[in-house]
Structure formats: C-alpha cells, structure tokens
Length: 214
Image (cartoon, rainbow, N blue to C red; front, side, top):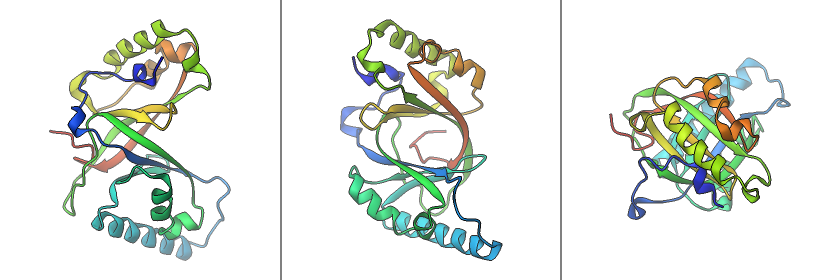
C-alpha cells in the first residue's frame, strides 16, 4: 500500500519535471503574545520584507495567506534543516506568531514556480488531507480507489491547479480553481471511514505559483 493512492493521478507531471520542495504551514499560534498595534504592524512589515528578500534570492517560490488566518510558504529546497534556517530569518517567525509545520512536498499535478515581482493575487480552494496513523497498514485498497474516483466529482481535472504528497506518508494537498463544497469533501469514502481527515480553506496566492496555465 502506498500513499500514491491518495492522489488523483489525473494530470501527473513527467518524471523529468518532478522536484521536491518544502511546504510550510504557518498555523496561527493561539498562545502568541498580544502586542500593541504599532509592534504588530512593525512585525508584519518586517515579515513581508523578508518574504520579498527570500523570493529575490530564489529561496521562497510561493507564499500566501489563508482566509481566516495562517498561510503557506513553499521553499526551494528538499532539506528540512535548510528550510528551518531560512525560516528563522523572518522576525515574525522568531516571535512565534505561528506554529510551523515543515513538510517535504512532492507534486504530482503541477509544480511550484516563481512568479517574479509583477503578479496578480487569486483565490483557490485548498484541501489538506491528513492521513490517520496506521491507515496505510490496513487492508483498505478498495477505499483508496474509491477515494481517487471520488476526487473526480469534487474537482474535474481541468480545475485542479496542484496536487501532491506531504512528508513521509503525512497526507496530501489539493488546490482547486473555484469553490469546493466542504460537505461534499466530507462524503468521500476514505473520509467517512476515518482513513483521512480533510480541511478546506480559501488560499490567496499569486497566479502561476503552481505553474498552472490559464
């Protein structure tokens, strides 16, 4: 059994194009220190300046906030220590404004592309599938096949901007153009059986960050 069965397999990129990145979830820290507005604004300004610097250095390929808080970075490395070193250059990260998750990202649909300085922000539906511990060791081949087929109902292939695996059997992500019905996502056979747990959010990101074509 492999986590590959979590994936759609609809528009997979060729082996020559495959590359791994570090996908960083910036999860809002519920215990972060309450700061005066002036200090909070100063940290945000420094945070954005650091994003620009990392992007110009080719270290940060994509970044964007989630509606409601938190966000993502995609770093141009396959090394966790290197990713952590780059992240610590961010004053807001050092101030523990977020709880970070740093996971290897292996794209299967799309990839990650730098968009340069002139870009347009766009919103996508972002689905994160967290894999339950031990799920891959169970005899659930049929469930994973049903999950893959069910994804076709959630997101036709022409609306999928990105899809790929996270970490060592940590789960997968799906980035879709348009709105995804969260209740429909929950009716997925693998979700119903408790194999995976989905989280659906709206992501704001630069158009072209996933090398998608419009």
